[in-house]
Length: 429
Image (cartoon, rainbow, N blue to C red):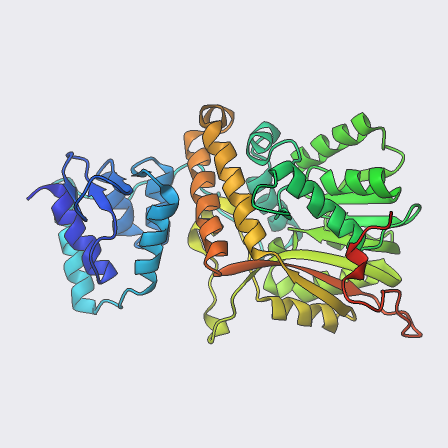
């Protein structure tokens, strides 16, 4: 029997239903839904099956994808959507069925003893030390961000903003949408000339530069990435803002020169971790003056009935954001309030992140050859899969992203916010 038909039978056993896409195996055989249209899942080499044998599930599939042993021809979004939808409904396999599946997989691999394969070099190296310690967090940030500023320029575009943009319409350009997001944050924080802003997780300096240039504030931007900091400092010099913007390689736990009038944390809190989040919120509270505002822009997951069963996504953890954790937006708001903040507004931007990610995927695919040259074929494949899958997750509502505006209440309880909710988002002429 051709390899594709044998492999399709195994996949259908795992999924508990018919194969949702065409399948092509290493011997050129095909199986699956009839017809020539639609995406094709390509298993280029038996090594992909060896990876699944020793790491069943998402991590084994991820390793095969990163190594180029597994691929998709056609619309990647459609393929991921079909496979994810069916996998989410798959019934659990009985022990006898699992044993039978392993035996069939070994036969399909061939006569060679299927010894484990080393993971692709793009996988995060062995981690040491307590989770979310200063040392381990620095290593995790370096894995994700220190892969070359030129690569990020290719993917993110000239704005160099690595977080959800805010689109006026679906036709708004990525640059326009990112500029709109930065200005929205500044308006929510009610920035005024002469104030001090702390930008936590400042990235390549885009928020710090925008706030200093457009609103006249003095900014301290902190990041754990050496490459980001070097790039941001160069941009600050080119803008002539070195008297207003200071970029530091520093952890939020090491920042002690408050008080600040406002704090922005855009796409950084996902790295903090559940065990450290209360400390994060408390430290930011302590760095704000009374009446000061915090804008916390953070990805959120849906709450589950059994919160104790939450596990970090194995592909994301191994290849994208080591030790990254997502929490429901209600949990985040509660921890901010427990630290002493008064939460005044929460705005959901889920659909905007899907649009942002599709733009980034388009940039990557358009510059694929250059992306491979700047990093590696495996690294480019990691990013294509991660961003496309994330776009679908936002579109289907499996994850979201929210901007929470919180205030450190003054002693007398007075409020500096307008009476009408969200009136602050209209910039004064």
